[in-house]
Image (cartoon, rainbow, N blue to C red; front, side, top):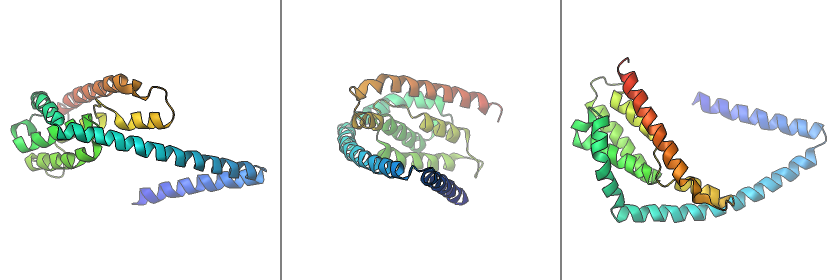
Length: 196
């Protein structure tokens, strides 16, 4: 809680000092004008972003309801059984891991969160050292941070709202970069597991 307050103080000091310096240097009118301009563009951006996010959430829900995410989960299961040593032996833990990663891959962040929490609870149940993250828990966290994206719907929506002529062009680079990040993360985890 203390860190949150500290960040608020730092932001307040930065904004306050910026306003004071701006007023004393005779730029008060320019500051007011820039505030009004940024408010106008921000509201316009948010309204267009909300519409695009609704569209992508709908597409992802269709993928979920049609069973596409379930099929993707079945494809992921054998790979995850190789990576997760302890959790692979427990069907509940592995099922939650698979559903979390699959939901994240499809851009279903809200659907992924409950599965992620459930996966951590299940892995903690299997953990012999309570209060300390197991190797599988650390690996799961790394995979969530890398978050392989097949459809980066949030970034596509932001690019479209910002006026990009081709907002979907980032799909292939997103797949490659998040895939490489996940592979490097898994390799690092497996190496560090031997020493810690």
